[in-house]
Length: 293
Image 1 (tube, helix red, strand yellow):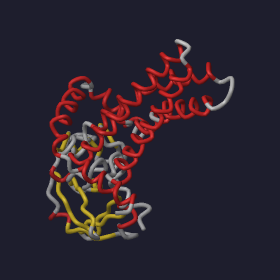
Image 2 (cartoon, one colour; image 1 turned 180 degrees about the horizontal axis):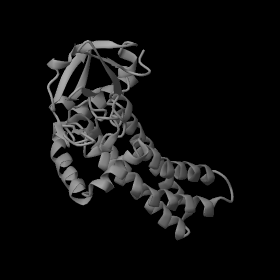
Image 3 (tube, rainbow, N blue to C red; image 1 turned 60 degrees about the horizontal axis):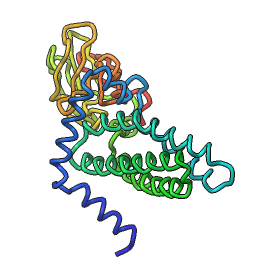
């Protein structure tokens, strides 16, 4: 078997390792009991910036540790290298908080890879903590050796994180393809009277599921797919349906979106839903997606 294929098989085993589920359940329970306030979770997910926080926060410890390893190979850089090791250990804390918050809202296969990813990162932080202590004691050789070991472990953890993000699409925008698949121009949907009044409904247009809320002759239309992990929004809960700012809550992980704009109100989703323009001609509803095609 080719080496790369062997690695793929190993990752597939991680994804399907049901023996990890009890550990996943315990850690997820701990994360959800510790990080409870929704405003805090939204901030750690990255709702205010419209982008997951964890990959951004992880650049700080990773950059510090790579820089430390470089200085360890040069004369005269011991003090600066030690400080960089300390910076990496301290900055790993907020990165881990953001990562665990995201991880707690993942599917089983993603969560299994994620728990191994987090475990490897914890080992790396332990090695770098020991490296810092050894350096402070003047044991530079063992301190540097521990640092290089930590870098090797964190590189492996990063590989798992890349698999989680790109192969398993955790943290990705699951509606990014909608503008590329939906045709340009106005598309007929249905006679307005066939759209249920005051409740969420789904209509498939040009092969794309759309979520609709009709109130009189005004219809709000967004993608019916949650941008977090493709949850079926048409099965979600309508919030403030009679108010000025109706929203929908995803039935899978409780992300909340404004129907007027598609914007995220609460995570774990960070990417907005594609928002469709509407018009009514001779009693027939038509939609258009700006930028489609």
